[in-house]
Amino acid sequence: MRVGIFTDTYLPDCNGVAAAVSALARELTAIGHHASIIAPEGGHSFNENFGFNHIYLPAFRHERIPLPLCWSALGSPESKRIVNSQFDIIHAHSLGPVGVYGARVAHRLNIPLVITIHTDVLAYVTHYRITAGLATPLKHILLYQLRKLLETAELQGTRGGQPLEQLIRCFAAASACVIMPSEKTARKLAGYIGNSRLEVCPSGVELPRRELYGCQRTSRMQGVIRLLYVGRITAEKGIPMLLGSIDDLVARGYNIELTLAGPISVHSGLLRRLRP
Image 1: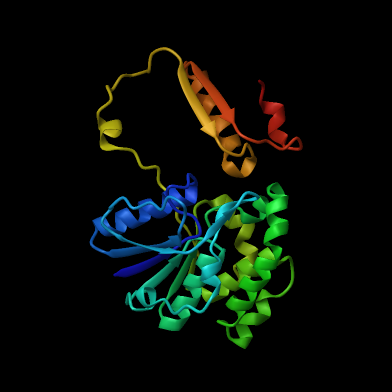
Image 2 (image 1 turned 45 degrees about the vertical axis):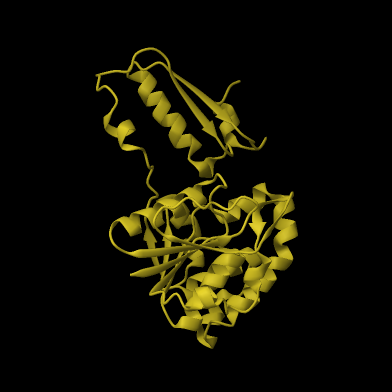
């Protein structure tokens, strides 16, 4: 199967979506499929050969927005290299310009579209208020482009709510399947999916084989086990589950030192469980 993977973020950017997209393409290639990643071109595009294709679209970065702005994806989906790739399916991994570009390519080629919503995108709007404000005009452009792909009956369920909520509804209506990595995210966003098929497919954690099997097997690790988390310190990142797991391990006799590094909202209920 020839899979076109469209994403608004990719290596060398360091984030969960970029890592998940790269792992997906490698695993698809390993079992005999043909994967191509379509992503924004950055100042240091990632060219390491993993055995699958990379197609980069012109983009630029803004200091207030954490992801590349791929304005080139807003144009007509006529890239010969993409249209002539003979994809069997399009898998979009974002609600941004490249993700919408993938939806438009799927419509043009008359092939299935699948979208993975990797996180609670509505919570991101609350956290990144400046970014959300700057992106508002862009969301209206993307909505316009997606709605052109839908039938009149499908459009009825995409109205109402904030632009981002409408964007989720439009993407779901245009997709054969919506994938989410956790039950928690699926429960929160299920109301925006409508009648589309919703599947929960957790993202794996990839470790080199030497780390999986090369370490000495002992009944209990000796000394202090130091864990470092780097990212937003908020509930939707699974911090409560992490803290609960640490409590369980400490109760079993493990000596664990956990460091959380990242921004935290002063309104977060997590503050009651954390200490310097």
